[in-house]
Length: 613
Image 1 (cartoon, rainbow, N blue to C red):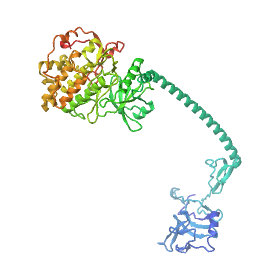
Image 2 (cartoon, rainbow, N blue to C red):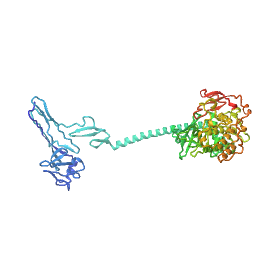
Image 3 (cartoon, helix red, strand yellow):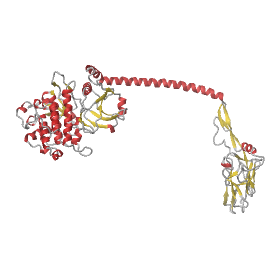
Image 4 (cartoon, rainbow, N blue to C red):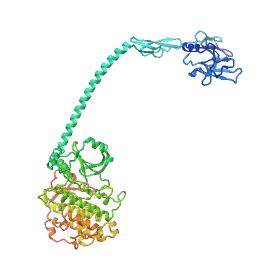
């Protein structure tokens, strides 16, 4: 039935503190009182401890904090936003006023006003079930006071059964468990000990078995890796290296054998950011060893064949015998991987090729004095190889790209993969032609006979590069100008080197020195090896030129060639020429025997020379 006017529902509620609070309060004092220095009353209401007004006047929990509104008459005490009317410590209760619940309708049974008050009961307070009255006012009006069943939504008790109680719940624990508190079940000590014993036994057995399996797998893997490393070591010529070192009986510094792990750490797992150079057969990485020493690591691009492995070990043997400031120092090698590596001292300022042919950016133009210094140091290194090392060594691949420069522009000859050891009782060696197009000695190319004068010819090409800053071989130029050695000698014979002389050198105007270097380069490029100076003589002449002295064998420059110079070179045979990267910085490699290489990287060429070159 509809209610006319206002319906009033009044509830007077009492809040009862739990027993712990009751006991604590009972021990404070016989008479209720506030803490010293704290407000004792708010209006007519006495505020006893553990309640209090203001910080430091109530028990630690914020739920005992009260506020006093002095703007009302009399002042009103609040517990949060609920009005407090009485506090009784002996009865362990606090009385509050609750809001009136309203549910109103008009004469047409339309809902006009509705209010549902609620009171949150934080721990440790509960609502008294004996001192509260629930009163409903109005016709056909009823109210219900119902307890919430905490066990209804889901069982909140782990390892136990939920037992509902007014305003609360507790847990009845399962067998083997006990109450740690009314709402928590834990294992009994006996059951706990038994479970732990079983658990420890299972876990211990499993852990032991797992440790055995892991150790066995690790042992098998390590054994397999060690076996593979041994196979690679033998395949890469490790045994051959050991035998060769024994032959020299301590006359050769034993190269260090690096592990693959050391080189991986040094190069950050051969990261591409560490690449500082790349050739036809290998990649050069900058590496940093554990002792912070910076090195250059030359790694083969492909797995080595038996012939290639001997060549790699051969380079180790050759360089290990050399101890010269202008020869890059070999520190060791790594032969236990599929792609073996050589470890050299790190030379930081790139190659002579870079400085001559990549001008601009980081490469500043080289002065004549600096060019002569580099040429002189290179000549000294080659002279040392030919005459001062324990066994004479012919480099066989002298070129600008194999001359490294350090930060002080000190020249260091590198890459001895093609080098040849010459027996003491011989001055020449018959061998398959190997070298770089543009630098190859024509006499060696025709006869397959390698002598120290073959290095002299290649060095003559380097001198021509230093004077002209032109590449030894360039297929981008007209055919008559592709080969620098041929063009250089031809222009010298005509007495007009100006068209190709480097502009920086020409601007310096030191033509007397330039003429002497031109004459020396021209003699180095002589077709007949016997007419070329030795590397020792070349080194001496360059020293004299630098010190402004006159070389004893210079005399009048002879820029003309007799017909006899060309007769023995006519009718040259057919050669296989690898032209990969010929004009991009990596000159082609020529050989007369590598017919089994892919035809994609080869062309067949009948090599003719202008005027026999």
